[in-house]
Image 1 (tube, rainbow, N blue to C red):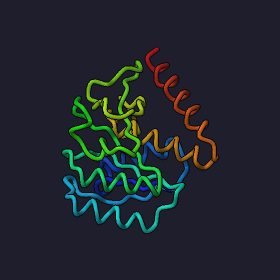
Image 2: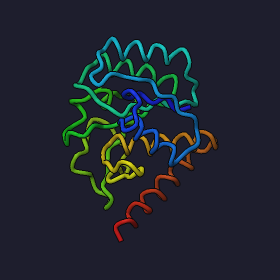
Image 3: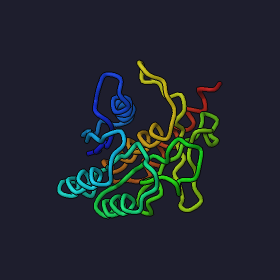
Image 4: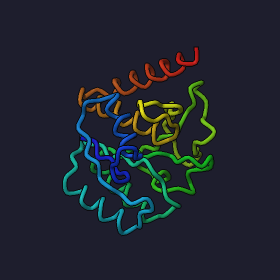
Length: 189
């Protein structure tokens, strides 16, 4: 199961876009957990406490947003990562992840954005304080929307991770990311 923490679902919402990206790469079930556009520490804590009661070690929690750096939020997500896989977007401000939570949390998987040429996308946050996962995430089209960002990259990564977990083989993740990167680069030709 993938638990997507994102805004309320509407026909053209960010959550609808991210759900479409995930479904392009996996048939694993996804549950949307609504989060306000500027969540408070209390709201995040309540959501994550509810997740603690139901996530399994094979589940993924996907967070496609960032807020200003907050040690409590980082701790909340780090604690959750002891129980399941936690994948978060690095953020789209072209600055260091040390300014953004939960991207800077130590134990989460933070995904940054490459452009189609395989270099850092201009919008993507970056970081030296921890190793980031870099995944192409620019100009992703789901039919009704074409967009770019670390949330795209994180959604693709989470979908591939879900497939690897399902297959009980993390090499599936590595192979899928490699094939995806090649396919994206070939779109430039």
